[in-house]
Length: 383
Image (cartoon, rainbow, N blue to C red; front, side, top):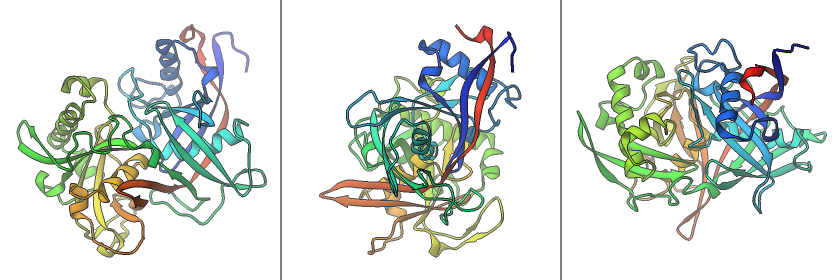
């Protein structure tokens, strides 16, 4: 397509886990951050509630960005920068990583020729520039390319696919440098309109704040609609997030958290195992299928499933004595993964602990290429 008013930028769209993202190569974007973000916002059609003039899907889970480039540090094969593109504001949040999208980064790098393929599994060492941490993606191969077909099923995605394992143990202390940023498995924070609230502040893959569902007057089995339709409850959860961000040393003020660091820490409210129904299809999850139930907030709404980084962080909290998550978890002696009941079903975290340290925090995901081609932006957007 020839049009002197538009500029073409190579791109692809991948589903990674329960999310979708636009994938771009670092060298195809401007170097200056403000110019780069202007182009990205144009690609997504932000700010606009429908993102009608771009590739964004008008939902936080489909307004995601992955920028891939050559490795900038030893021990990594590639660099990966995640961006959460705000739908209603001209803002791209680079404060955290996305575990679901991370599952598509390895396959993308292999397809692009950035990593040499190896059969039957190609291990891609990924430097996440958001956190400064390296994690590994174990990508199954078929005929020299990342496998797509398989029998692995994840809640929140139709059908099955080839299982990609992400080991996120290397991301502990992703933003604060420590698994327990305050050094405590539990802390007390004061929330206006609620009073003192006991929380667990944990940082693995992505920083999170955990709270007992009952302390918020909740069961832990709420649907996204039940939470998202209550503006007072959303504001309370946002107050908790902002206060936790300040206590974790991630921001200098709660207002900074509200305006500039919107994606993390994620807030999760947890409860002991109990039965509930999957919000999308009504399927019943029995109490025996999970070790506890959890609902996680992402970008000020409830996640319709459970994010990959939240899974690794929640699993890490579950195996850390004294945390709120550990206190509600079903006790078991075998080596089965930690099973988290979420609105879309169940997700597992393969946790290993040795010598008092978490040595493995792995999640299974599927990913596939949906589209590749060129996205067009007005020439006036480019420098």
